[in-house]
Image (cartoon, rainbow, N blue to C red; front, side, top):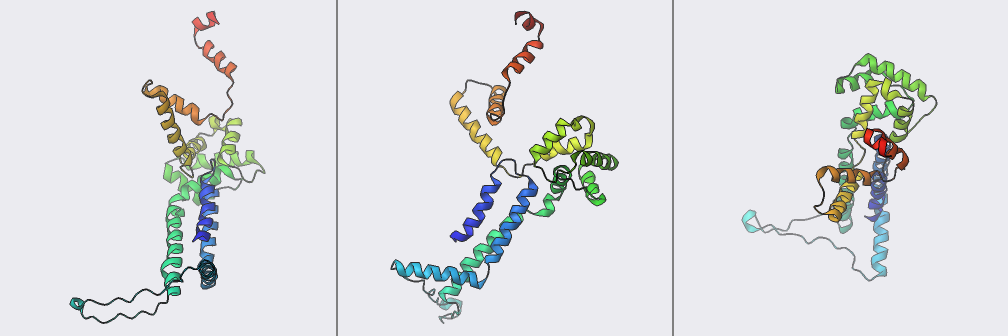
Length: 264
């Protein structure tokens, strides 16, 4: 099973990265599913089985034996031995190898069901690529979020023209481009969609890391702070990678109060 878990581990590590878009996650999921499905055949199992038998022989380990045949209790009809046609190899192939692969593939497909994620994928197509949404796709978004269809179409054209030849961006770079061009002030419908897109990340790793940090903060400060200060400290900890211009902050702090202006 190590080969199976090595494949799923690639997907697991990818989904734990911050800044992963849903589109990128879905592409990685499809590749993982294809890789697992390509393993589900007799040739692959025979290769793994032969390697396992070689390991058993090299380490004086008994080879797998057939399961003991069970006797039907007399009260259920008899005492006759139930015959079985499955060899040890077939038993492992059907009830272990294929069963594990089927379970993993089914679980991944259920977790990343494209039907339930279709709206978010369309939103990412709107912001992260220079490909236009067609009329049906735009209708799906405005109906789901109760927005104006004509406004979305006109704002999309404005945004895509400004985007130019940039074929693919992640959500962070798209947001930076959106704000730098002041689209957050002029494209109201798309601005609301972008806010929604930011509230639905492709994974929960950032949230989990934030809660881990919060626990560490609470252990350090104990009960010496209120909820507001604790939330502020947690926010500073989460965004600690951002460069902060202290002079700019002090200047803004002073400028908001006349008494401070006199002192500083």
